[in-house]
Each structure stands twice: as C-alpha cells, then as structure tokens.
Image 1 (cartoon, helix red, strand yellow):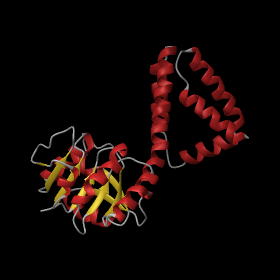
Image 2 (cartoon, helix red, strand yellow):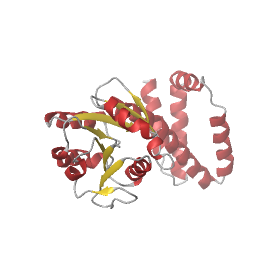
Image 3 (tube, rainbow, N blue to C red):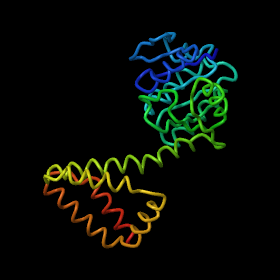
Image 4 (tube, rainbow, N blue to C red):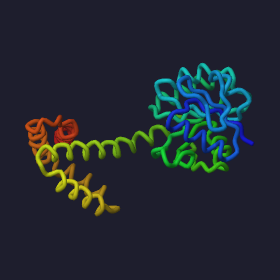
Length: 253
C-alpha cells in the first residue's frame, strides 16, 4: 500500500487525496485551514505528514510552495520524492528543485493540465525533474494519468502556462465580448456566432489565425482600436481588446 502525504486539502488537493484513499493508499494529510477527512490520516504539520510517506504531494498554492517545502523537508525520508503540483512559474519550480536538492530530497515538477473537479486523480498531468518517473510509478496504479517529460524541473510548469496564455486568453476575450454584447443588446447573437466559429475550428485554424494576424496587423490594429473605443462607450473595460490592439501595433511596427 502506497503512503502518500498530501499538503493542501482544498479543492484540488482534497479531490486527489480522496481518490488516493479510495484506491487503497494511506494518505497523510495536512492543511492549516482544512481538516483531513474521508479516511485520511490527520498530520499536525508538513514534516509530520511527510514522515513515513513514500511520496509527498504539495498542492497548496504557488505562494505557499517554498514555505511548505522548507517546513516539510525535515520529515522526508531517504529516496522519497517531493512533488510540487502548484501552478507556478518555471523559475519557482527551479527554486524548489534547488531547495530540495540542498536538503538531499529528489524533486518533481508536476503540472495539472485540466480542472481537477470531476476528475480528481485522473486529471491529466505532466511531470519532469529527477523524481518524475517515481511519481508516475506510484500514482499511475491508483488511476493517475501522468505524461513524464525527460526534462529538468520547470519545463512541465512552462508548458502548462504556455497553454494558459492561449486558453485563459481565449476565455477572457469571450467573457469581455459577451459582456460588451450584453451592454449593446445583442448577447444571444454574439454567443451563437462564437459557438459557430469554435465548432468550425479545425487543424488549419491556427495557421489561418497566425498568418492573418501578421499579414493584416496594421488594419486589424485600427479595428481593435475602434473596438476598444466602443467598449469604453458601453462602459465595459476593454482589457482584452486593448491588449489585442497593442499586440497588433507591435507586430506591424
């Protein structure tokens, strides 16, 4: 039976911990704000949770990742991997790797690549760093989906954030456009238009978007300037429209 320490029992950490318990693992949980439940073993600190664990999963927050590692590293046994699942920059992951290395602990950068609610431990993940293969070996039998990259810590985090630039940027543009359309009285029309565009997307869509953006940057910059002005007139802050305008101006310069 695997013994796994889970640090951070919020939405993501709690779901992963519960799935590990359901799969038969012994989960030693610690969160200063959330009590361990559902068959987990309550620990009194990060270091106590790490004691006797074969794997430590840090799922608190990027803000707390360094502090959690420094607080828990003393309880990590020989050969145990400290896996950081928080959404942080590649630089943060490299910092954590260095701290772990100084303490004689192997580190893994694990990027959660989709929302955890509804998926739990089965949420697709990328892992890299010295301990990545061990993380996959321990968690995969319990149902985890982990793609191991032969790369140093920070690469998995970087790939997640590059995807976030696209996906969260797309989501932000959709939200801003619909907010403006609501103010203009045509939200249903625009929603239908967006759905149709996304449904028609294919493998050549990226080439078309990128090629057209570079080719028509000057004209499109003027178009997005007009769009940003319209949003101002609608009392909708044009964050995404103005950012698109500025990008297009840079490409046309």
